[in-house]
Length: 520
Image (cartoon, rainbow, N blue to C red; front, top):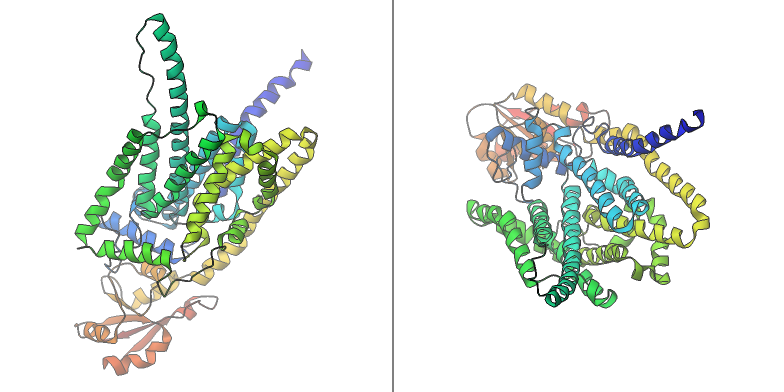
């Protein structure tokens, strides 16, 4: 009897493994998520837009604290942050980042579930760990940016498309066989279960991606789906080829339009076309073509080395993908082929744009994790004698990937937050210009300072506009870079008194110095 006691305990430990893994996943993305202040322009813009929606009840057009419409992005991320902030009544750093962190966790779980079904539990574990611990995926997943939610939407869209297209081939094959059998028996042919729901789900997720990023989201999803369908026509046997019927394609277009179209049409009308000019032309066409002077242009090969660094330490597994391609394993694994097409096509689309950022690669990461998980398990299946050293190597890489984050949490992130800190400076400004007194930000775009100042704010660029604003009765507070302070009195014919300096409010040298001047 005693010899049998350890067995239930062992089974209990096995059952606890998924729970422990899920807790570790949440800890990776949520530990000290709100401990540091907002640290970038993107985070501060997101927090401003969300807080203004929460404060005013105007959820249509993203608007900053200075009253200027924010036309860089569609509103879905700001809606999610505002909904998160509604739980506490204010959009805090934690609330602003919560949609990104939750999206990261959901994306990892989605990859695990998909790969488990298509390639088995071992490949699913490898793929999930690769995605969950890739250094750049974790970093942006803990930041109030749209990139990881976009990755989740793209991932859900492509996985649903894969399931729908594969189910269409199975349905057609089964229907042909069943029609032959029932025709011989003289019985009517019943209707098979529709696969339209998979394509509708894929289109719904793509529509959400459009509400996060704009039409570029369709440029990520569509080419991957079409390239995969084209490849499978040459690789898969006729009865197993994924299919997309015209009816399902039209369904997808209709669903995407229904999800994203109304808001884009409303934004165009509400801004008299300004949203279309700024968002579509500047933030899409000009960025793609590299025509905007303020944006850096990168060579076509930029994403290959940058992507390898962003995926570390798992880029070290790239030789396994080479093995899978050279050994013929790619012909045996539809999921591996899908992951490879995902990565190659999406990187090619992103590389065609002149303006590039490492953050834009995040939607590629689930496909890379899928390909690496399948390749690793295929290689190990072909070489079972290496199972123990391969397991040890995988554990070492996982530990290395996780060991980076205590250093980030307790050393790197606090140092970066100290360099970007604006809260004390904002407090010093509001001590001399308490709300509801307006504060003028002149020739400076500090969204983080604006977030901490709170409304009312005015952003000005030209001296003539500043001179006109100072003609209004009452005291005035003006924040500007110190190099303009010497000319302020000469251009405005007003006497200024310095009352606050960003350098005095920080323990480190500020990245961009600012001073606050007041006048009666």
